[in-house]
Length: 95
Image (cartoon, rainbow, N blue to C red):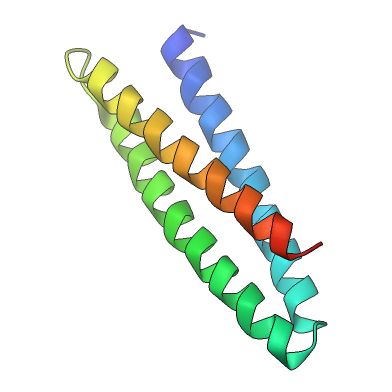
């Protein structure tokens, strides 16, 4: 497997993990008080937005030409950083 294929697989695996974590946070939000649920839902919606953007970057990454690979990979890494920050923020509210 090439390093490109390995990177794409790693990104897919991480995205799957984060999708599961979003589902877990959604379940916790359903059990929260009304006031807390509103805040949790805002966090979850933000995570879903970042998840969709990250999925788009992954799709671009999978279909990128060799010439565009570095640029698309950088975009994927930037998207990943935003997603990671959104998760940190959301988890800080759920504690």
